[in-house]
Image (cartoon, rainbow, N blue to C red; front, side, top):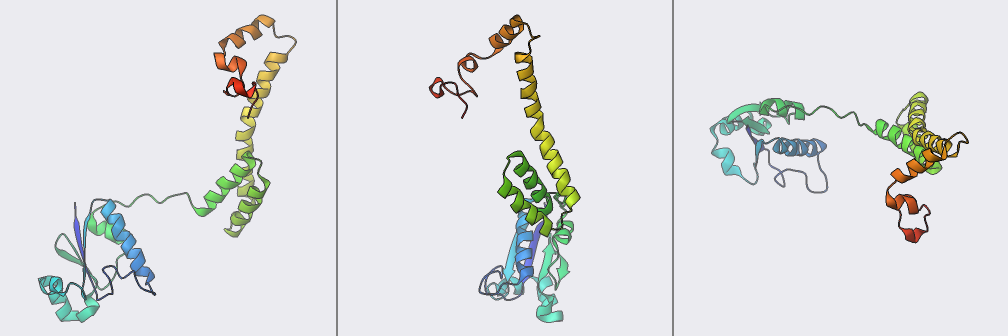
Length: 209
């Protein structure tokens, strides 16, 4: 697996993401380096203000500084070869330099999350939940049609067990159902289910909840 060395300009700490003002690109780059580590890439950071000997002792870095000054920093070496000078590469670029594949982009966006939440609100009969997530989805630009699809899907999932239990009730309560059929079904039930409801103990007096 590849190894990456990052030679940073002078900063207050090893990553530059400390203190009262933090540069967003440094936060992003630090997260990208952490991601590279999870992919098995060895990452080393060198800060000019804290580790000047690392800069002086590397011929490539020393030459770049002599030619361009601190504008050559950050300088990034991959497997000992200079691959980037003066910029912080994006995660895609780092992945290419390190020879690792980028993960597939997630389809679970904020908008999708709100559609799922709207469906969950319908399934749980939660009016405040529906209003809350409807408002968030609307602010994210989710269309009314997509929200209607989420509601329809959730209602379909919700209706399936309801239809199943109604069908069971019809089978048990139908006047045409022979008693021997009812008895055979009851015998197939687990012992606990004969005396209690929903898998509860006899202490619940056979009631749900």
